[in-house]
Image (tube, rainbow, N blue to C red; front, side, top):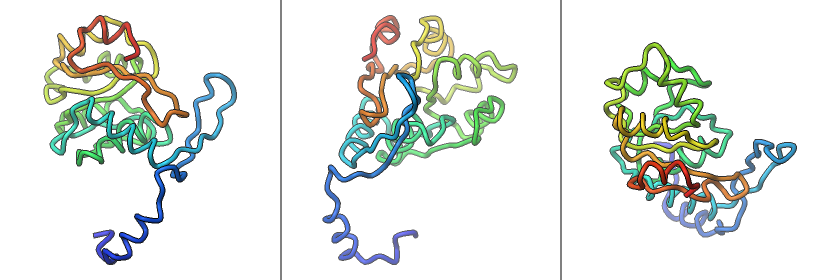
Length: 196
């Protein structure tokens, strides 16, 4: 509906005016190595990283991605939203800030198929009073990032809960998202002992 008023000729003209190296966004780093700084990202970097991330995760138009990472962060913006949209997946946003109760309800009620988070976020969800593995039965994939993943968490996610295709990824804002990502079928010890 949004683009219905634009004729194909105008659309083609605008597409041809965009170069892959043209700036598309300014994202801010988390300041790990100093003060946060703005990073100018281009179309090529954002789209390519999102496409490869979606491919590695096996995303498709039947997936329902649970997004509780902030959109101003590369993890939420590019690694989840853009990767999902490229494949036509649904993006489920249960809350504006990290609220475990709302997230747990959304996973169940929206039948989410993928979950994303840092180890501390996922541990908080699993340790929450409202959590039960049964509520997560629709989840089969996702990505852990932002910090090293303990083997105990990976075992719990894969073996106890059944999220068999969860990956571990490492990225930096300056690289438009992930730099490396494990494979969904990597052995658990490899998933947690390498950065991809």
